[in-house]
Amino acid sequence: MNKIKAVPGTGGEHYVSYDKRSGDESIVYFTKDLSALGLRKIFDKVSGRLSGKIGIKLHTGEKHGPNIIPRSWVEALIKEDLPDAVIVETNTYYDGDRYTTDKHRETLKVNGWTFCPVDILDENGTAEFPVRGGKWFKGVHMGKNLLNYDSLFVLTHFKGHTQGGFGGSAKNIGIGCADGRIGKAQIHTTPGSSDQWDIKKEEFMERMMESAKAVVDHFGNNICFVNVMRNMSVSCDCEGLAAAPVVTPNVGIVASTDILAVDQACVDLVYAMKEQDRHALVERIESRHGLRQLSYMKELHMGNDKYKLLDIDNGDKEISLSDAVRDVVPFKE
Image: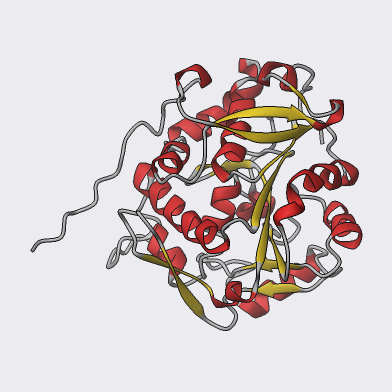
């Protein structure tokens, strides 16, 4: 019997407004407090499901990257709330400051990630994680050391992305847990292609989301997500000092135990801004067909694209998207 060739979905350039969505609502927490204390407070809202050996998956950045989550915030969180946790990362698919484990560890020192252990997950090889219900993969290769953790805290700098349109929690684990040689190649490159980055638009989003699903399914209830909406360049932190200048206003921090809801809320907050504030990031998202990340997560039953946004600065009172971004100001260094 011939295998049926997978066909990418469509619509990744079209934003679906909240009133056009269906299904259940999840809980998403929000704070405007972009500080170490704000991060600790919102983490407390979603951290109850973490136990055992905890990994913190975050993007530690290329050398001197200007937009990554401040190290001081993460250091305070680990010291006060996660004293035994370990930052986890993988090597990159591109030849840069984090291409090999040795180069990666040097970059970690340069960027100041020296206050707790950092586990390069693919330092000791790979492990194939199953993808249930996917159309592109039966399994994706992850850094082998990910198997050593009982829980995963996904701490993400929400921003644009050259290939994905935007990078949220799903990109952080879908690309960021895949090992640097096999797993990332599965997502980025058609086998036999001479173009390392030939997979784009809807197909790329779908492959990335299937990889993210493999990680989410592996940890089950022992995973939670925090997205920091600060220094949101249209470029990924992979671009380091070459990242495009930030023009999108800072917003706040968003958290949930639902990966789709947390990324959807961040996208919705961007679209809720005034046109002059959102145009650069929206153009990046739509031109790459990045909204397919969200619709495909829903098709894969990874979560809900409807949610209640609760303002932890005001006693967990429900807040509208427009109120959440009403007071944003033009970005300044």
